[in-house]
Every structure is written in C-alpha cells, then in structure tokens.
Amino acid sequence: MIGECGTSPEGRANARRTRADTARLKAREPPIAAKEHLDAPKTPLSGAGKARMNRALRGNLQGRPTVRSSRSRLTPWDRSQDMIRLLIVTDVRLYREGLAQMLGREEELSIVGAAADLEEALTCVRDLRPDLALIDLAMPESLAAVRAIRVLSTEARVVALAVPEIEEEVLACAEAGVAGYVPREAGVADLISTIQTVGRGELLCSPRMAAAFRERLTSLAASQASSGSERRLTGREIEILGLLERGLSNKDLARQLGIEVATVKNHVHNILEKLRVHRRGQAAARARGTPHRMLGR
Image (cartoon, rainbow, N blue to C red; front, side, top):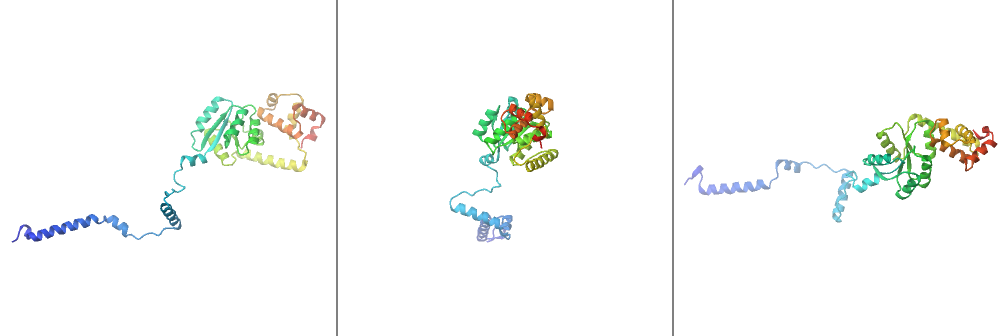
C-alpha cells in the first residue's frame, strides 16, 4: 500500500532515521571556516617561538604560572624602579609646593621630599637618597648647598633652577658640581626635559655654553701643565681679590661686577682654596704681599 509522498510506512521510517543520523553528524562537524583552519598547513615556529613554547611548557609542568613577556605592561613595582627620585630645594614655599604638584604628575618622576634650606636639604639627601636634587639658584648659599650635597652623596645629581645663561654664571654652577641647569626664561617642558636628561647621566646645554665648557677645560689643562703644583688665579678671581682688599661684601661685589651673589661666593671660595687660606682677610693680606701678576696665569 502506498501512503503519502509515494512511500510506504517502512520507507518513511527509514528516511526519518537517515535524516536524524545526518543531523547528528552535522552537529559534530566543525564549521567550514574551522575545517579550513584545521586543514591548513602549519607554519613552523621560529627559534624564539620554540623557546617561548618550551618555557611555557616547563612552567606548566612544574606547576608555575606562565610568565608574561618583558614587553607586557609593567607592574607598579617595576615602574617605581624606573622612576627618578626627586628632591626639591628652594626657600620659597610657593615654588616648593607648585613644583611638587606639577612634577608629581609626570610618570617618570617621584617627589621624595622638599627642603627650604641647606640643613633640611642635607637631611633629606642623607635619609631619602634621591637620584636628583632640584635647587633654586636664587636661594642664599645655593652653590654651597650644591657642593655639600655632592660631598654627602656622589650618586645624587644636581639641577640648578633659574640660572642666567651667561657664560660666567653657568661655569660657576658647573665648577660647584651642577650636572644640569634650567635658564630663567625656560618653561615647564624645558625643566622636565632637563631632569630626564640629567637622570640619564647626560648634559643638556646650548651650543654656546658647550663651547664655553670646552674653552674652560682647555684653559684648565694648560694652566695645570704650566703651573705645576701651584694653582693660579683667573683674571676674574684677581679682580675680585683686589676688591676684597677694599673690604667689600659679597653683595657689593656682585653689584659692582654685575653678576649674581652666588657667583661671587663661588669665586671667593675658589680664591681661598687656591691661596690655601680660610678667611677673606687672609686672602686680602696675601694679595697685598704678592704682586697680582704672580698670582694670575
């Protein structure tokens, strides 16, 4: 007997079983895209790829988590190791707080402390061990602070703020131990760039100042070669020594010579050191008893 669709009941049952089997097979079969991926030829791993796979397998076999590549995002601990630890030294509270807030936003910088005078600065350097000290050159005894910091910590570099870009002023900072300087007309970007450059152990200065450094080094080398063990005074130091004989103060000297008080102090320090005396009066007495042509080079 023929039923609907021209098939017998037995044929319809067989057809249903066939359709059911086909559906089950299709459910197990991956999609066409997946089949193409599985059937595609495998690209051989490079040497680096094999090494990474072997490290990952060893780590999993030993129950250790797979370590991410060093190029992955740094953890907070890693970032702290790469940051420059910065100490701010200025007697102006507004500068201290403003610089701390502004520089503290930089990912590469960590503000570890701020000091208002030389004593606080030395305490911070000793206790906090900063990588870099930012010193306001307009602060009293600023160059003395630079020298003291360099004596206390040879690892701490110093950047001087608000330096007049005059050859004599910049050279005085360099002789005191400054590793970098920020001119008075510089902006925030210049300050950050200088800090980063000094943090890398490099020096950032204008071509004119670089030429001045070269000339000073050449002059010092020639002076040491010609004078032997005796250290002679420069022309500017002889000029200041003559004014010391008249009993002028550092402020009077700076006003008369048109230079900063900090620069005068640095010159006086060099004069005392070269003449091997401890007081200004002793230097003046030494100058009165020796012709200036014998003191200079």
